[in-house]
Amino acid sequence: MRCPELDWEIRTSYGKGYNLQMNKVEREQLTEIIEADNGTNWWQPVLFEEKIRSQLPTDLKIISVPPNPAGNFNCFAYALGLENDKEFLGGQNPIQKEFIRYLLNKRILGIIEKPSVGDLVFYENEEGVITHGGIVQDDGSILSKWMWGALFAHKLWDVPSSFGDTAFYTKAPDSRLVKQTYAEYRDSGVQIDPIT
Image (cartoon, rainbow, N blue to C red; front, side, top):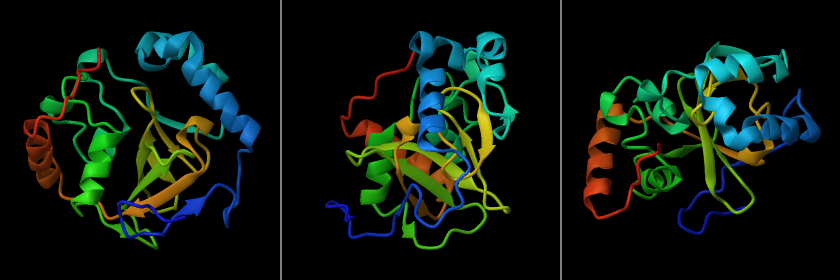
């Protein structure tokens, strides 16, 4: 599959050359867990512990539960190394899929064929929308924050079905360059609505 905006074809698809742990039904169940009650239980620390943790597969390693709302961030902020930057906490300057596409178009994120430790992985749904991002670990697992929820260590395809069935890898950019590019992006007139 070729992305029309970029000249890259280096993608992998669910089930292609990977030892799968979760099947499609299990991935769909993860999506249902996350989206239950409009996702309210997913991103609030107390509700996550009360209503979510016990429903998750034991093969998923929870690294940390969702932070309190004022210190929360999404998967893209985490993957890009901005999880401790106050400018990107609490949903005031959310990094969304459009900004990831912008970084690709600007060639700040460069697609690679074979990932190494510290490289990034991004997932796409069937419409080509970038839905999720994470960081490649030394054992080949992925470290990623699922939306505004918990931080997990997981196999490439042990993710909710809503993240999609296509993934690609990039080198991790310098977070200072990402922050500078975000300011340019925001100042270009793009509407970035806070997430509350």
